[in-house]
Length: 293
Image 1: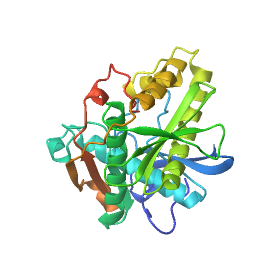
Image 2: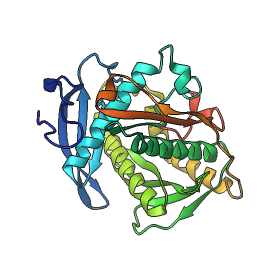
Image 3: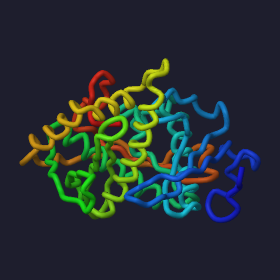
């Protein structure tokens, strides 16, 4: 396994006493660009083994035009997952608002001991998820926008404190309709994040299309939702919700948690959680096909 020899996350690999067991490198096509895509697996037994079938069993992934950045992003995601599993059912769970939102929403890791980068990323994701839930619950407006890519549709949800959340979708390709979402200070910034998520989900759906004949079925609510919205019925449901949202006003959010999660991962990164009190409960009902995956 190649070490991170310089910059952030030196010493993060298992051979140096760190939590990362392995890196896997491939390419991901995003808007006709072949970007580096890196997957990370943590040391065995550090966190529970993933039961995902559609999303795969990696512990963190990162995508970027620069390989070094993709690797750092992948390690950050793996450290976020480590912190999540260590705290979600711990006696401290309420401190990090896991009693309010028991998902990985709003957890961000940033190399080193400076909290600013981790806090900004965590808050950005918190605003993104709040915006998506507010739209889905009928509390916020979404509007269609044109993109420079004929094969990609997109709609925008204005953020509660500025900026936008963009949902990008394409299909029906292998496995059906695919979606990605991201937030940013501008449409361009949010769209760039959204299409990376779109490409990852498209890849997952294509793989599922190849293996679903085997004796496998998705067991997580997130994967079942992904497959539901990949269907024509799910796509029409999304379009219907966008149309019905015209004129709705975004509610004002309040933080349920906005603090650092300290633990053994702090040797490598600052991990922060920012999460809002949700505008509704649909996302937490595993039997409902809420647009939350």
